[in-house]
Length: 211
Image (cartoon, rainbow, N blue to C red; front, side, top):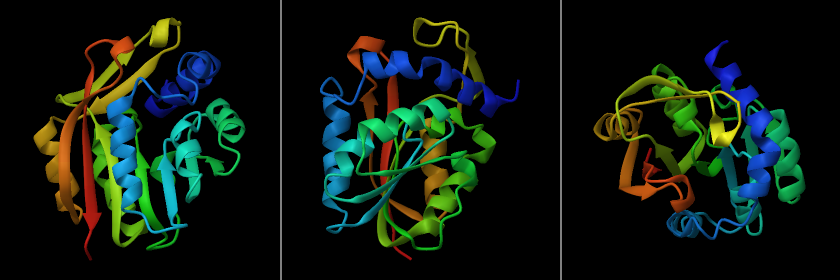
């Protein structure tokens, strides 16, 4: 099965389970919510935000209270839930590597736990496209893996029989790619995914488009 199809099918199969377990209440993700608040503080009032790999719309729900939000996800089931969970936002079911909004269209782009499911040879092009779609002084907030991982799989995603795919670079390489496509890194930090899922950490990076 093609890698992206594994991701699409895996999140379709686990959508309802994840929505019940995680829902739109992310209080256990205290650090992630703090970073989201900092991201929001850099977006102008009524600004336009892309939630790339929006899942069930939990973060779109928060952001859409103050901003115009467009969420994109490859999973049809996740998009269905996102429309219910974040009725103020707009959602599109699409592979986030194929997003083609106009140049300088967004004030901010969020990619929480989504780039990690894209084959790493496509990471640079995804980030370059983010840079293209952002306005000058726009910001991105992205989560990456922490290890050199050409590809890995799990056949028991969230305790189900669903299969899942991950891919990524080490921390230094991911930050280098961000800079190579034209972003200036504001900060980067390691954040634990959620205590309930174990000791899994991700690299969160906030960066700005200066030109």
